[in-house]
Image (tube, rainbow, N blue to C red):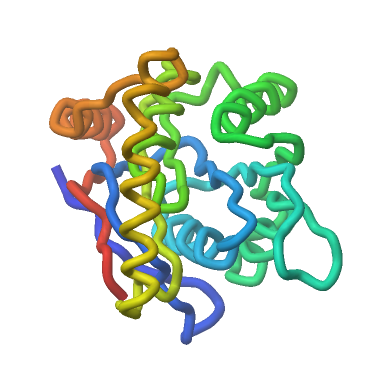
Length: 224
């Protein structure tokens, strides 16, 4: 089986490869899905665009109904993400909009509804999600719980300052990461999350790639 290799073929030679912090194994998916975050749409959009140009999917869902922070005019997360994708060479016709979600579960459930409405749901078998790395596996576990029929994959995206190794940002990021990690057991017990074994998931992704005759990579590159 061949390995996936990263290659950017977009319009801007100075494109930043993104801020991948840690990832599941990856193979080509039917859709990308960006979980909105009002503080770091730039990094999420750039990282997802990099994966789009590397051939991991042809269409991407931008999800988020929260108004962005620190912007001149009110704009929803989904629209800010779409602007970032377009800026980095993703055609608007390949972007699907979900503008109502207020939390991670709604990101997934509402995106499913959109694909149902467009007649695309039945043919969706694999998803690659992009979410803020401070929440760790929560995005992946929500996808596995709320969309159990798809193969879940995920890329954790770090803020620019963390990716660049700025000490204070890294310290704050680690504190937030531990805060969110402590929430996972309770959320799992309440039925919001599904536990994911990364070794088993890697095998599932590898098997899926083999069945589909496409490339597979054990982890996406995590540095520029």
